[in-house]
Amino acid sequence: YEKAPETIWWNGSLVPWDRARVHVTSEVAMRGTNVFEGLRAYWQPESEQHVVVHLHRHLARLAQSARLIRLPQAESAESVARLLDGVPELIRALRHRGDLYLRPTLYIDEGRYGWRSGQVKLGCYIAGYPTDPRVDRPMSCVVSSWRRSPDLAVSPLAKVGAAYQAFRLPRIEAAMAGADEAILLNTNDTVAETGGAAVFLVRGDTVVTPPLADGVLDGITRGIVIDLLRSRWGMKVVERSVPRSELYVADEVFVCGTLDEVRIVSSVDAVPIGGGTWPVAEGVRALYLDICAGQQDPVDPAMLHTVSS
Ligand code: PMP
Image (cartoon, rainbow, N blue to C red; front, side, top):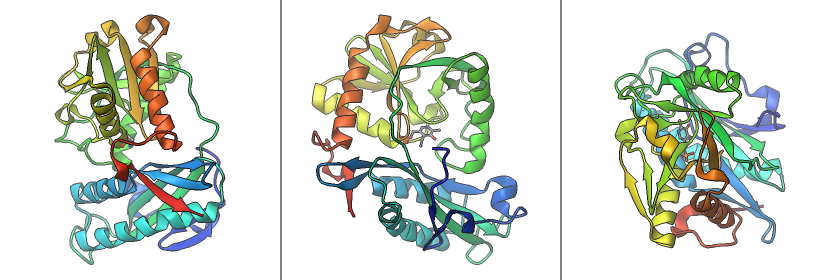
């Protein structure tokens, strides 16, 4: 999602891309003090409409992130409500007949560490990026030498812009090793997540994923996938700590997140996983994409929020 779209939703208005600005000395520019969400709006060609995946859950998590970094509550709630209206407004304005990735963001524009009402001025925006065509080849991962930050530093439960510095070096490390993505361990040396997705392992008829206490974001796709595995296929899904070595002996490894959707991991540290077929991961991936495309029903009917043009 590198190409700049023409229009940004900024503080309640639709403005040309280059009008949405912050000052170089602002708190958000200096310390990355923002909280953000990544949403996908899928284009359903038959009905000619977009559907946003769990719009309300994403914005509830945005409010939670704001709370976790103690942005003033009343102003945050007001901005989150405006962003909720802004998402469909921006989707309509972009007039893109294809899938979109949307970034609702709330930031400190003026002031520094204020946490009480009136102490800082907040700003908010939504940027939307076309995401077609889809990247769908399996990916290679490496286990990073860098750790996921512990809850007592910058909580993994908060999607705070500044915290994403923690993924810069792992991603560079992965790229230098010729891999697509880095899997981070936590400070207890067990598996946490990638910089943008939850990690799942298939072990026989059980699927395993690290619990929130192991340094993972409360992923919305993670929740959808757990529901699908349990209710559509009757699989056992266990949230428990995963030692690094278990990655190499798993039948399958896959990751899931809004941007990655469900992606198969073909190797970890150059060790091939699953011998070239990944029936569970491929099945979940196909089912997830079918649901988003409107070809199968979601487990939770509230999953897809329709935005008609
Ligand atoms: N972990 C991190 C660190 C992320 O940034 C994301 C993307 N929001 C995820 C996991 C996946 O979460 P979700 O399924 O809610 O997109």
